[in-house]
Amino acid sequence: MLRNKIILRIGFLIGLMSITSVQLFSQENNYWSLQQGATAALNGGAVIANAKNQTAAYYNPGLLPFVKSNSVSLNASTYFLKNVSIENGAGKNIDLEYVRFGVVPQNIFGILDITKNDKWTLSYAILSEIHSEINFATRNEFLIDISDVYPGSETYLGGYKYYNKLKENWYGLAIGYKLSDEFGIGLSTFVVVNNLDYSEARIANVIVEDEANNFVRTIVNSSLNEDLTYSSVGLLMKLGLSYKLDKLRLGLSLTSPLLNLNFVGKAKVTRGVYISTDDNSLSNINQVSFQEKINTTNKKPFTIDFGATYSFPKTDVSIRAAYYGAIDTYDLIDKNDFDNSSNFDQIEDFGIPQMAKKSVTNIGVGLIQELSKKTSLYAGFSTDFNNFDESKFNRQEDFVPSIGYWDLYHYSLGLSNHLKHFQLVYGLTYMRGRSQGDLQIINISDPIIDNLFFGELTKDTKTTVNEINLNIGFIYYFR
View (cartoon, rainbow, N blue to C red):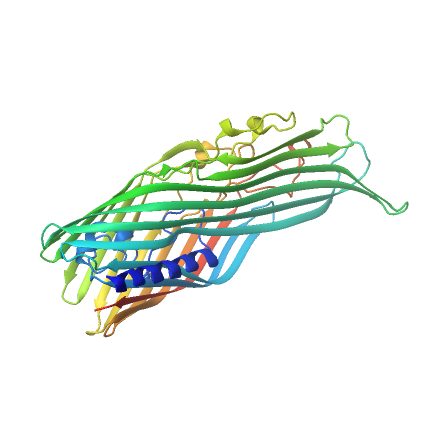
């Protein structure tokens, strides 16, 4: 008993340190960007019916009674290269590009052998469900005759900067019960902590230059700035079932929507629209809003996750299909908490951050081939469809703290080695995304006077996403 308590404490500290001290770079609006554990990552996430999977507390707690007891699992993901490129994303021939290298500890799971009843299994989990960072910055400078007040051409200077860091950590306990040698049931409860640090800045300047008279003057200054610092805490539950029929294993996991704990989560939000110009025919605008200590809302969908594994001699083939329900438009912050005492604070008129998610179904396929008594080969494929519902918003007008719209596909290959007291799993995963004809993020190549000196958004974009990861998993069995 004492040894298990020590193991739990050490595991908790290691997991907490790995989650809070290192950044992980993924995607904003994809459910399967991160698979929990190297086994799942290399097997296409198709582990809902795999009784050997150490991460059953997350994927399917109904598998817990069949997982080897008194063990701990540490998993890490090291990405060699991450690249996001949006051709014409900020205007004609103005691309948005993001490249990153890094090392990422990912999660920790443990099975606790603290009951004398072999039918019950207890587990804990500390994991990174979402860790996303995207950072774009660009500028454009050229001559254009855009002002009727000054003759000749002016210098147009446009800029765009986007930063979005999203983290969501889960802390959970799970219990499983073996109804028979074929049938298991389990329940997991997770505390979900979500943190968002978002900012977007769009700037346009029109500058008059007269070299003969050494004269330089900014005649137009236009900007739209958004900032949101957001945290939320909630609870959700997973109900899992597993059934074994000869060589076929079936698994089903149901995940509840998120129950928000509003008194814990808080947000700070700023949004400003500003234009100042020498042209008297244009109305100057100066709108700004700042609010803090606002209650927050985070929503996650009801999920149905089904899997099957069929065992051939020395080969396991697994499939998985997960349906995520839609979430209608909702406010991320509670406008009832706004302080309206200032005449200049106009957030209710133009600045409530919102989100909406469409229903998606992801599939995964995995293969485990036994090469020898101690070595197995892993291979997998999975889809990772974008869940953002862009039909609900107009990005030029609405406050939407997200720009990710791309679908992703994952390919994986790796090995596992079984030694006396532990198992080592390692391999490579490649993630790719392609999209064409999507709406630009911003247009600073074709400014229009009555559009705050920004251009109309076009659909001549081409997006590519690539990421290569080295996944490493370590499972230690205490007996």
